[in-house]
Each structure stands twice: as structure tokens, then as C-alpha cells.
Length: 263
Image (cartoon, rainbow, N blue to C red; front, side):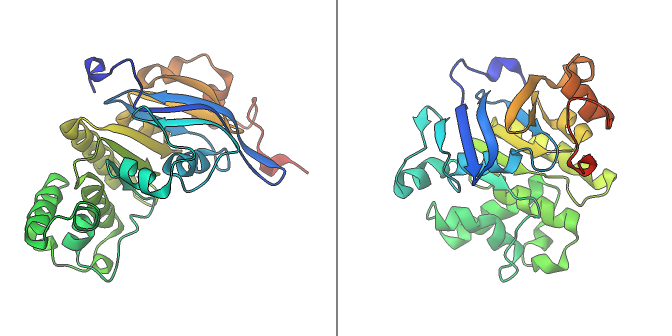
């Protein structure tokens, strides 16, 4: 995505966010900005705080301290009504698509349009079919049951749902998990094309380095609840950062401690 799309005021801003579960400190003074129209990918191993960070942004978890802004609005401490209004301009692709088996494909795609935006069924179905087309699925898919689809097709339906309301912000949670490399590549390309088409700001959680480099303008590496490196995706191979080098090379030795090696 072109850098000219970005403005000085970030679309999403986290400042010194801390979140603990009992004695376990998951996020420690985590700070991160995502510019308007930017695609940022957050990478890191399991248990480093990526999903907890996303849940804090979405309001599913409350941090103990810090600030989180979406489009200039402080979302920590917002009432449920205010938060719902703020999140109405967002889309989400869940890790395992999270489709409703009781609804046909088109109703899955149009769910947010009808529930949150009050769009009538006929118009919503037309929009759903249009969005399915953007992810490479024809109108004949509209009335199918999600359980009849492959994992790759379910991800495409999930992506169509994420972009159905033309959101300003889209969150992607491990979008290529469970996919073979070819379908993973297809999803990466669709994510990039769809978000560029919308001009949306995107935050992707991933542990897949190839995927991160394809869809991200910038990449941030989280370790033990803090950002240890952030920079342009094209510079990650030559970052000179020991955390990044260990992560992308899959080395056992380095500053990242592997829990598996602890006695």
C-alpha cells in the first residue's frame, strides 16, 4: 500500500498497555501505532501476547493500565454502546473463519450488514454476492451451507464477511492457519487486494513470516508482551535485531527463550 495514504494521526494507537492474569504478565508496557490505510502485521511465538493485545483492542479484555485509541477515541472505559458504535466501522477475519453453520453462506457474509447496519435482506444478499465475487467465489456459493465448504473456501467466506460493510479497519487473526502453502498464498493475495481496494487500515496477527512479508507494510515483533522490533516489511530480513533474526531463522539459540527447554 502506498505510503501517501498514511496520515500523521494513527488509526489505532496503543500506549503502555499492561495486562496480567494473576501473576502472569502477558502485556508489559506495549506501545504500537498503526497509520491510516496501513497494513501492520504483528508476529511472535505462541504465548507472547498477540491475541491478548487484539482482545484488548476489541474490548474483550480490559488492560490494567495504558491507553488504546481507535480513530482518535480512547476505547478503554467506553460504555458498551459507545464501543459497539466504534467497532461498527471494523471487520474481523477469525482464525478458523467462525462461520455460522445454521446460516447459508450469503447470510454469513451479510450478518453484520443486517444486524449492525439494518440493511434489508434483498439488498444485503446482493452485497454479499458482490463481496463473494471479490474473494473469487461465484453466486452459486451463496445458498450453500458453510459445512459443505473446504477450509480454504470457509476462509474466503470469512474474508468476504470481514469486508462486507466496507470497514475502515480490519483485524485478521492468523489468516493462513490450517491452510496448505498454495491456499495460504491465495488468502494472502486476497487480503492484500481487498484491503487495498477498500483503503482499509489492517492489523494482522500471525506467526507465518512469508505471509507477514506479503501482506504487511510494516511488521512488529512481540516478545514477552512488549514490542522488540518494528519496521518496514522489506527490511525485516536485514533488521540486525537479534530477536528478529532468531525468530525468522527458527534458531534455538538467541535472546528468545523457549519454554520447551526449561527444566
